Image 1 (tube, each protein chain N blue to C red):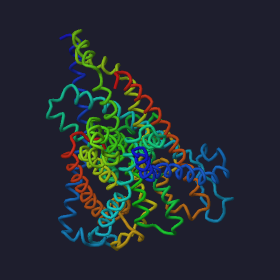
Image 2: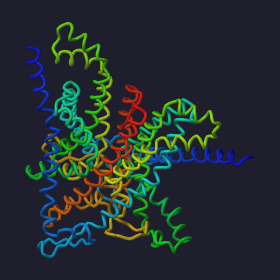
Image 3: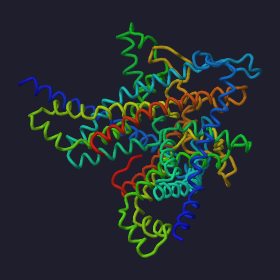
Image 4: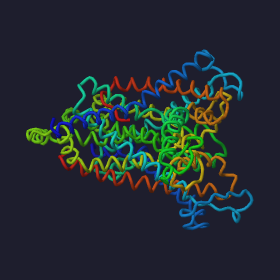
Length: 279
Length: 309
């Protein structure tokens, strides 16, 4: 055979091998989480979701406070982050020539480049220190900031994808701009907007770094309001895997399975809503 | 009346949009004002020396230098981007040119999943699975077969090391680099592809031509990947080993700026000025990130202009 074709052969083999190597780890991650987390969950039973964590070295307990914390954080950060991003995106699309709109576009994307741990430090400085304590509220604010770039970008794209003729139709029947936006454009772009919101939530669900110095890590009681200390599943994993106790590692794997399942549920939902996703 | 309404609508949206500006203003203010005392106290040596002598008693006895974490950040990100680049180019070529439709859709979904999976999950897997694997089947063999190279000049005791962090980061940044390269690759006009094929190129020659057409995108992917890797925190904090080292040996434990902050910021308030040192570190991190991603975005704009997108 001639050298050109040998080269082609080698090239094809190497490329396919590298492509497989590139995605292999994620399968291994999911598999390991399923096996090791599954063992923990089977051993601990349903009380894994209802109990408090075990003392070092003995038993498995549960992750109820951390689970509650993660859900509360997702809820409160969405309440703050989603409307903010939604209306900011409307401004950016509807008044594209204004200076504010240009700023929103540039800065909301620039937020993506701020390391998440720095967001945590910022919220520590502007909320935790003045308030004198860690809180779910501070954690939710940090997560809301993390959420903004994703939601804003997706809502902007969804609104822009609506053809201009629909707007013209709205204006021609005497609608005001706000009516056109909320009654016509948002309705048509519903799918894209919803996808953006879900992606935002999926993104902050497993965040760890912004919570390190904002949340307080109280993992022995379920928080009742946002001014209390709280915990998240991600923080629990981060701390427990660094302890020398075997039972805490098991809890960490079980918690990882719970977190992964929550993430996968959101991920499949997003996938069903929108074909192509960029997380 | 319409114009008035438009104005009102604009004004009612304004508070939401301004929050984004406020966040940036606060960020700049906090980072600069919190870093300032540390920079004032130790000057440039804060960034050029490798010392970490905290003191609870007085600032006079304390000394800090961020060289080790800065070195670690740079080394691990470069390592990660270097490993991830050929892998991401391969995934793009595989998806765009080789895979049948079904495989292609599945493969794309997997890469989306890789991008979204919480970083703590990577960290847990990295520490419990990847680190022992790398230690036993990569680090020790290299250590024994090539002990004279400075890169491999130390024993990988625990396995947590700069190398482990680099490898884990490479896995985590593949989806981003893939995304950048794929966008450029699929924007190459069909006529170019046909022209190349009509010359009777082999797939290898064809690939080389295509890659040449999107060279700025490859550079952009490299830069954006570097930026991503530099800012990653918890996964790295778990596998990098957390030690103040500036050694050429890849098996030595190290620190990155973000993992230093993750590990020590919580206790920093007990030591005078230590928090401020960390804020100075985060400022460095931000500058690195802005530099890499800024350049990356500029490159990407050139790619988009290239084929009129």
